[in-house]
Length: 304
Image (cartoon, rainbow, N blue to C red; front, side, top):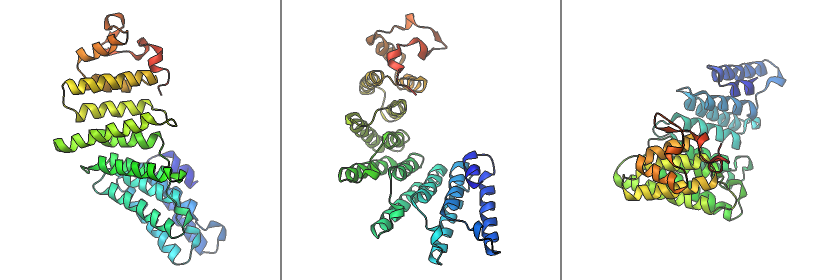
C-alpha cells in the first residue's frame, strides 16, 4: 500500500504513506510482529515525499532518514538505510531547489562513501545516486553549481576507469551536467566558465562509444548557448556546428528546434536549413514556427 501511494503522486499521498508507517509501529508495539516496519517501508515513504512536490518534502525525508539511523543505533538492524534510501532522500532534497539543498545532497553522498569505506556494503554509491546529486545542483541557486556538477562527473569517470562499474556515467549523467550549465547565472566570468564546462561535457559524451546522445542532450546544450554565449559570430558558429551534429544523430524534435530558434536569428536559422537542403519557402510555417513533420525524416528518426 505504501509503495502504491509513493507511485501515485496524488495530493497528500506522502502524508498518508507516513500515517500507515506510524500505524505499523503502533501495531508492532501492541504485539503484531508481522507489522514491524523495515527499510523497504521507510524507503517507500521517503520516495513518496521525493515525488510529492510538497514544500516540506525534503524536511520530512531527512527526518525519516534520521529516525531510521536512531532506531538502528538503538538495535533495530531491519531499518539500516541502504543505497535506495539515500538516493530517495537526495532526490527529495534536489527537487526542492532551495538554498543549500544541493550541498546537503552532496554531503549525504560523502556520508555514503565514508560508510562504505568502513565496510557498509548496503550504501555503496551508484550512478543513480551521483545523478541525483548532479540534478540537485541543476535545480539549485548556487552560482558555481556547474563546477560542482562537472567535478562529480569527472569523479564518476575516474572511479569507473579504475574498475568501479557501479558509478559509470550514463546519458543522464552527462545531460544533467549540461542542464546545470544551462541553468547557470551570475557574472560574465561565471557564465563563461559554465559554457566551457558544457563544451567539455559534450565533447566527452561525443567521444563515448557506449552512450548515444539524445534529444535532451541537444535541447539543454542549445539552451546553454542561448543563455551563456553573447550574440555574435561565435554564437552563430557554435549553433551551426551543434545543429549539424544534432541532425546527424537524428534527434531533432520540437523542443530542440525551439531552443535552436531561440539561440539564433531568423537569418542564421534560414542559412542552417538551406545548407542542409531545406528551404523555408518549401515548407509550411504557422506563426513563424516550423513543423517538425515537414523536415527530413533522417533529422528526427532517433528523437524521443
